[in-house]
Length: 468
Picture (tube, rainbow, N blue to C red):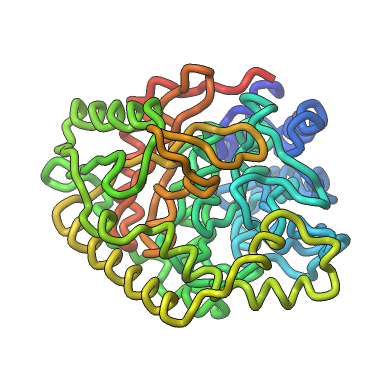
C-alpha cells in the first residue's frame, strides 16, 4: 500500500487519510522514501522541508481527536524554489541567494497549508526562474524522469519532474512564458496557468514584469488542478493584480445546454511544430468531437499578424533588465546562462516597446473575437517533445529556430493573461510524453477544467509513469 501511494493523486490521498485507511505519516514517509530512492538521478528536489513528518503526526492526531480538517488535510506538497517558505531555504536558483531563509510563506504556500497540506520540499529551477531548462550554478540541472538525458523543461522543471517521478502529488509553480505548462508537457503531468491575477504573486520572485507572471498548480489529475485552483484564488490585500473575488468565474461551469465549442490549430502564425505534436493535437480534437463537442479547425488572424514571441522579447527586455542589473551588481561572477544573455542584449528602444505594447493589445482583441465564437482553443503546449539538455538552435519543417521557439505556443496566453491548461494526450516515437494545451476566455477556468476532465477520460495514456 505504501509503495502504491506515490502515484495516487492528492484528492484520493486526502480521502484515504480522512477515512483512516492510511495515515498522513505513511503518505509523507512514502514520498520521502521515493525522494531518497530516485532524486539523486533526477535532481528535482533541492531542499527538504524540516518538520514534514512532525506536521504529519500532528495532522493524524488532529484527525483522531475529531478536529476540523481541510480539503488537503495531511497531504504533502512541494513548491518551486522561487516561492518563499517560512523557515525553509528559498534560494531562487542562484548563488547570490545561497542560504536565504524567508520569515514568511508566499500567499500560495500559506493557502495550501491552511487547507491542511504539508510542505514536503522545494524544487529546482533555472537561475531566477528564467530559461527553458531547469539548470543553475547553485543546485545544478534537473533531468527528465522519462529520459535522464533530456530536459524536464523550465522554469518549473524541478516541480514537474518531482510529480512525474512520484516524489510529490501536488506542486506550486510559476509561469512567465511557458514555465507552468511546458514542463508539465515535457514530463507528462498536468498544470494550470490561471487568468492573470487569479492567484496572488505575493512572496514569489521575481515579480518583474508582474503583469506577465502567473502562479499555477501542477498535479497528477485534472480534479487536483481544480481543487488546488479553488484553494489558491482570490485577493490577498498585497498583490494589486489579484482583484477578482475568489468565487468569481466567467466560464461554463457545468456543461451548457449545447455542445462545448472547440477550435483547434497547430500553426496559425505560431511557427513550425513537430509532426508528432501536431498529430497529438488532432487526435485530441477527434476525441472531443466523438464525445459530442463541436470541433472545428481554426485560424486566429491576430496570431498571424503579430508574432507573440517577438512581442514578448521586446516588452520583456525593457522591463526586466533594470531588476536584473540591480540584483546581480557586484555578483557578476555568479551569473549563469540567462542573466548573462540578458545583460548582453541591446536595450529595447522606446519605439519598439510601444510597438510591442500595441501588438499585445491587438492579440487581446483577437482572442476576444475568437472566444466570442468558441469556448475552448486546443493547440500544442510545446512545439517539440522534451528535448536534449542544453538545447540550442534546432530545425523543424526545414526552418531553423532558437531555443525559445518551444514557447511560441504558450507565450500568447502569458502576454494576454488568458487561462491555459496543459495535459498529456500522446507519446512520441521515442517514448516521451506529448501534451496538448487548452485555453479559454478571461476568468473562464471552469471551461477548460471541465473540457480537460472530459479529455482525461478519453486519453490513451492515462496512468502511465516513467520506469525508474
